Image 1 (cartoon, rainbow, N blue to C red):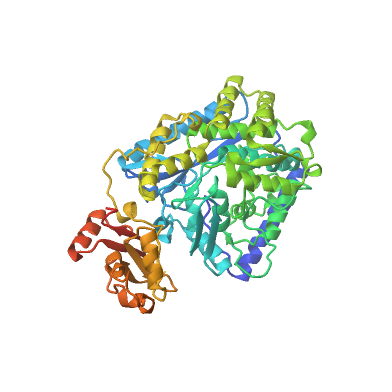
Image 2 (image 1 turned 90 degrees about the vertical axis):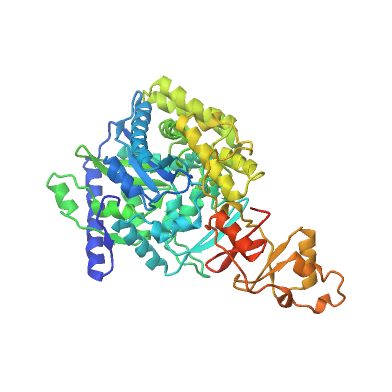
Length: 616
């Protein structure tokens, strides 16, 4: 839906007109398939490169429209977040050195963008989820000011009729409610497109599903979100929940999410995949259409199937079926949506080549895979890969195989065969698949990020650690050496320049708090056991109602009547507080002015942390 002026589907008349156009598009596609009008050769590839834009302090920068205007290149387009952009490559025929050509084209386009970015004090980061993202960047204020994003947001929110509930549990746990689809803006991907022969589409699509888990496992690059260590590829869980039109319910709900891996193997023809999608998911938006697509086919014209493409653009399968028209000829392709952006362009091209090689190298023994494997095993592989990355044990051909053994012993040789069969340059094949092999034996993106972030937190608070992490990520990306050759950060790195420090950089978020009805003796012991000097007091709504200091409670250590003394009697009620974005110099001045040693940190009147003079 990227280039369409879209509006909400509201009235019965609008919905009826859109459904008519949608069903005619499906009918037209079936006619084209039956008449052999869908292009069969040559096979082409293409890619969409999404990326983050950050300021010189490595925080998200909200200037995507200004950058896009100055870049002035039709290869570039917006994303829903005003700190993201996307490059659409030109299609390339699958042969010879096409992957090197794709690498050069994307590198040239990124260099063009970097020149403009430099003039705007902006940098480009390739990463599945930007580690310096925080909740303040996912408000509607950060939505790109283009009508289609606003329309889609309103349509999905209206369909849910309640806030989006996000719950992701990894090493840490994220549990939050959010009121828009802007959480989608946390995700950036490298979407690989492969044209598929129409006569083999269903079997090839099912094979794409079968290999998705192992491919994802070696490509993971999104383990961190809002400072929390979650899945190896957190994008998979986050995207599924961030645009979910299903309302939460105590009733068992069999509906699929709009973001899904699928429920079963596909059968029939590609038309049946589109029919299933239209049957499961109601259309949210519409646009203007010129001609009836069936009439166009019957008169010898090739339709763009705009209604079908628009509907398809609001249903997000991780392997998505796409129809397109290039050079006046219609074609079908699979869009691989699960591969994340980064950590370098070289890594991304290697990921894509590995996937394409596997698609082309399918052994005869795996034809009609839907008759031989259980789909639930394949789906389990995919989500386990998203959670555990290279630590996954896959179910492959009915047996459990470690990720390393599956990739090295089975899939890499299969990818080489597929590429050679397509006459891909042996030099290119060896160059990029060796990158995959080295990554298997060292670190993939998520492993490097997690190990480095953990080391940094030995010497820095989480937000400072995230900022240093992104600064080092940027420096390594600029060299474009693959992540398998990167040394893990040892934790003693610094930012390397003076950046404005805020309360968020220094505050503690893992804090103990009490309620005013708790036992003062218990509070005193907690503070003594944990060496805590300041204890916030909250109510049932998590709102701050008071603050205890060690000086307040320590005088009651030997008081025989301590059990009769309430926290409310002892706590400070007239509190001086701060927010996470207050400059650290102002927070220090506030403490000095009021002769205090701590400031509770509030967000929307809720306690989210505390900063003390010791922290500063």
